[in-house]
Length: 231
Image (cartoon, rainbow, N blue to C red; front, side, top):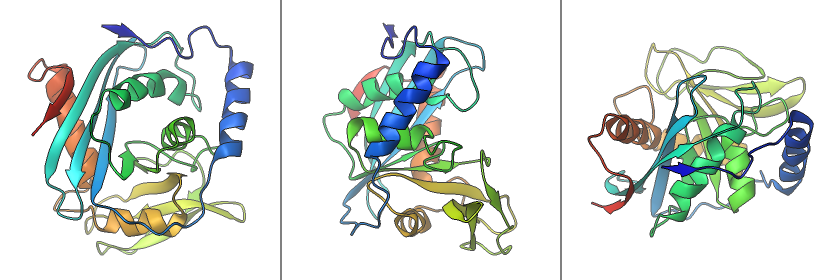
């Protein structure tokens, strides 16, 4: 099992400074999206555990057919601190990313992008660190205020921090709780909404992160092996 030493020994003031530096590199302008592949990323760990199971699935786009996946089991030493979870999770995700022989045009991370108090959710942190086009799609709101979208699938409302929009609450399936999408890096607000609309199937969780979650759970149960695997 690998140890994710990237942020080992950091104190919170140091971590905050790293977030400021990474935020300065973020690009959340709208971009023309020319996509033939998309990725989904998921991390699994218990709240106070040090063992992390991380995975990325590579899908064709827009058909969303699985092409490959990458899995890593690693250890983290960074403590659980709300608002700094990326420091626990990103090092393992970087290891997953580095062992991928084929990388997606856009990566959808189970978590937040700029919809974060310091605009540094896991998707933004990972995107700024690696230079990868990324976005977050989370099951729960972390930061900001929103009005409930209409009950029909496809409805969306802005997530706001005072006068600044930082994401969307998106109704991926009729009469279920929304998911929360926001740019990570090299994507704008409208880009994220456009992508997530094309990634929804019959489930509440959009396909990239849903399939990544399934893979990581199977990996955690011992049904799948670490490494990069073509399908």
